[in-house]
Image 1 (cartoon, rainbow, N blue to C red):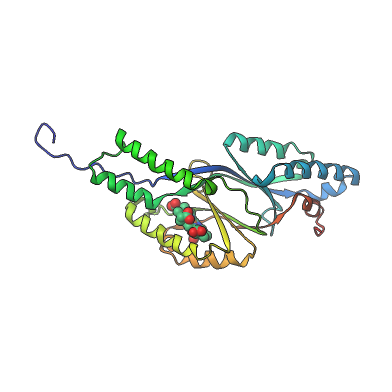
Image 2 (cartoon, rainbow, N blue to C red; image 1 turned 120 degrees about the vertical axis):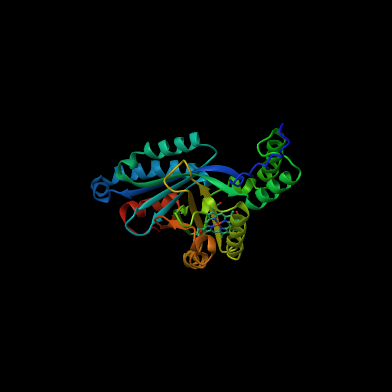
Length: 280
Ligand code: FEC
C-alpha cells in the first residue's frame, strides 16, 4: 500500500524467457579459387594441404569441415569454442594458413549455443509472483540464478557440444516475425511457451535421426537464431522442416534465411574439394 492507501498493481512479469548460453559458434563459408589453386606447382599444393590438414585436424571435435552443395559456397568451416576470444583465434588460425590465399569468404555467421527455458521460465516467474516477490528484486534475482545454475549443470553436454560427426549438415538463420499484425514479441509468455512446447513435441519425434543445435544471434549477427541440423540422411532435413512448417510457431511466426546443405569432410578430404576431384 502506498501513502494514499492504494494497493500497487503487481509489477509485470518479464517478457523475456530465461536462456542458457554455451559455446560460441562461427560458421565460415568460402569459395575456392580453383583456377589459381590449379596453377600452383604440385609440390606447393601438397605442402599447403599438409599444413591445412594438420592445423584443422589439430582443432579436434570442436571444428569441422563441410563440402557445401550448390553455388552459395564450396567449403564451410564450423567452429564451436569456449568464448568469443577463442573463436577469434580459430578464425585467425584458418586465415593464417597458406592455403587460405585460395579461399574467398562467401559468408559467415556468429552466434552462441542457446537453450531457451520457456517451461522453467514460466514456472519460476509464476511461482515467484504468487509468493509476492517483485521482479528484479534481490530475492527474485537469487531465485532466478538458482534455477539457471541447476539447469546449467543439467544441460552442460548440450551447452558445450562437440560437433556431431553425422554425414550431413543443414544450416540456416531465422527470425521470429515482428510484423504489424503478427508479432512474436508481443505475445504473452504463456502463449509463447505453449507454442514452443508444441514445437518441441514435433522435434522430439525426430530425436534419433537428427541432432539440432540452436544458437542465438540477436545482437551478434543479422538474424535472431541459427539452426544447425546434423543427420546421416539429408532427406530427414526436408521431412522435419516440412513438418515444422505446420507448427503454429513456424507457420505464423518464423522467417527463414538462406539454407545450406553440407557433406562432412575429414581434413584428408580437403584435397579432393580443392582440386574438384572425388575424395577417396
Ligand atoms: O524462441 C526461441 O527460443 C526460438 C529458438 C528456437 C528456434 C528453433 C527452430 C527449430 N528447431 C528445430 C528442431 C528442433 C528439434 C527439437 C526442437 C526442440 C526445441 C526446444 C526449444 C527449441 N527447439 Fe527447435 N527451435 C528453437 C528452440 N527443435 C526451446 C525444446 C527444448 C529443447 O530441445 O531445447 C527436439 C529436440 C529433442 O527433443 O531432441 C528436432 C528446427 C527448427 C527450424 C525450423 C522451424 O522453426 O520451423 C528444425 C528458432
